[in-house]
Amino acid sequence: MIFRKTFLLASLALPLALPAFSASLPVDLSPAQASRPRSPVVAEAQRLLSPNARFAKEGVLTVATTVGVLPFSDYATDNRTPVGNAPDIAQLIADSLGRRLELVSVAWADWPLGLQSGKYDLVVSNVTVTEERKEKFDFSTYRNDQLGVYVRSDSKIRSIKDPRELAGLRVIVGSATNQEQILLRWNQQNVAAGLKPVEILYFDDPAVLRLALQSGRADAHFAPNGWAAFEARDGKTRLVGTFSGGWPLTAEIAAAARKGSGLADAVTAAINAQIRNGNYAKALSRWSLESEAIAVSRTNPPGLPKP
Image 1 (tube, rainbow, N blue to C red):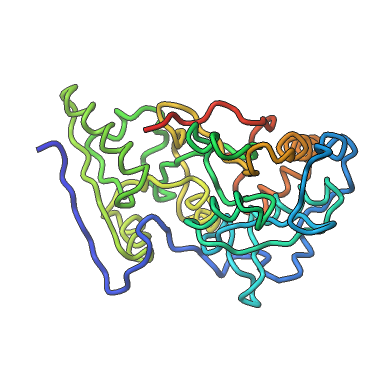
Image 2 (cartoon, helix red, strand yellow):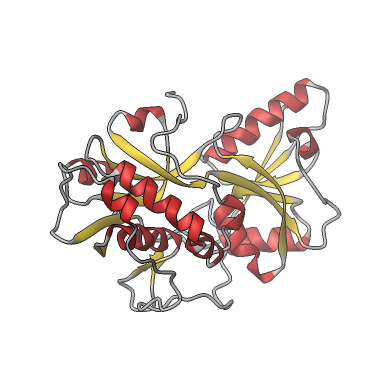
């Protein structure tokens, strides 16, 4: 047997990859978002706007985002205003271009068609750059796509920098996720090398997932770093290793525009201006995403290869 697959089920079925967020910790969920960083107009970004650029609305930057998962995007206390890191990044881009931001909540499956049809100008929604997507969209990167290995704060595990260091551990991972496929590949390599198999644990309840890690029933949680870092704000878990979301390749998260819309270079310049002036760092630190910061935004970098 290559590995042991253990399912620990609970009565409440929730998305498998999501940790239980500590909502009681201080975080700005107000509709007004007074603590959101803002920016003056960036002349270079405006200059790079194509003369042929067309917007969904005059004087407005219409940005779609998928709501439901902090720290990326969720509803504010009014249950209708999107807040999170994606709205923060969208706001800085709109400010840089001198346009009023209008956020549109959209289902993940619907954003490609809506963007292509011109219903909105940009999508800022934790979208990874891929070669297949680049055939239809232009991208401006704003975050590294990372996976994190998290352990209980008092765990004896101090660092995991190599997949071989997971051998013999009990590791929680979300079923049918990118990180599960990476973990399975690592496990196959480890077993082939004569190392102990990983005991892979699955949960259908984020609260039970957290309890398993805190009680010692699991050694580690392998998850999208952004979600897990937000959860770790309470100090009960800590990061011991990060890996690219496209392992073994690197991957980046980006704002997406229609292919040839004339927006991408301007959006990239806007993000780079915010990196230089410090607003970008503030937008990440508000949502515990500092570890995924990029040094420079790029337009249409190499993406993950086609399947």
